[in-house]
Length: 81
Image (cartoon, rainbow, N blue to C red; front, side, top):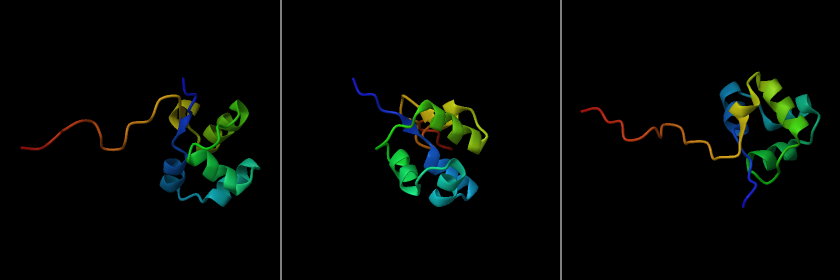
């Protein structure tokens, strides 16, 4: 059983115009750690996950999940006739 943690950090950063360096400085972590988190190469501690969610002012479930997030615009085949 895989213990992957999926996240939307890159999407939230892009949406709000925040660089990896800006986020890392606000959280007190190395900027490369943000990249590792975004790529799923590193799972954050609970404390760091909560701080990231707090930074973006969203519930932690919006940022992190144990299941892959659906791709944007993938609600099915909604086509206009």
